[in-house]
Length: 252
Image 1 (cartoon, one colour):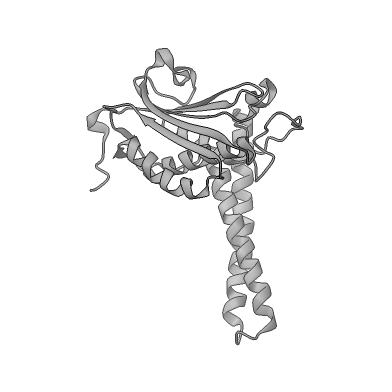
Image 2 (spheres, rainbow, N blue to C red):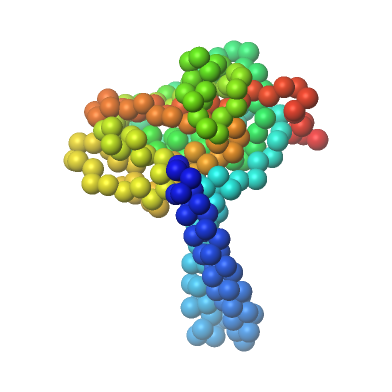
């Protein structure tokens, strides 16, 4: 994300959050003043509260897309993060879609936030499922150790030097053209996809991949994508391996 777009997204989120807090507070007071369940205003108040809570989630995602993320620095084995995320993902997979995973042995621990990285895996797998458009296909996940020599992380402005644990999420969906691929991590990026080329922002807010990038860069890592029309896509997330003295035991 460009610095200008990053700043714009962050400022919009903060101003929107101020308005949201006023609406939420007023609606909550209105609900408390309702005399009974039969109060005709209660249902309307509940609708306002539900909408306000959805807005709260949108603000959180906007801030994450802008890199405004509080990252817990804990010792993690990424394999366990992957396993937990796949337990959530598999029940949602369409019939005819096969998910496979491969984890190289001897992976070093990383420093990170389990919940945030869980969301990264879920978002990338969800994106891959959308690329298949409900048709039969394959999604493969591969976790391995990489280095700056074979990773785009070395070129990312937010990344740190050293070794990386990399997650590659591949699908054999419809792929993206170069114009889409170049802007795919921008928040709210929309375009006019052709009938044969998948565009990731056809559904939802268009924030999923921007959130992925914000979370990953907040961890000192990078995310990249390789894709061609009708040939599928591979999204690669590279997370730095920290020194032992940098670790905080997650179980502490």
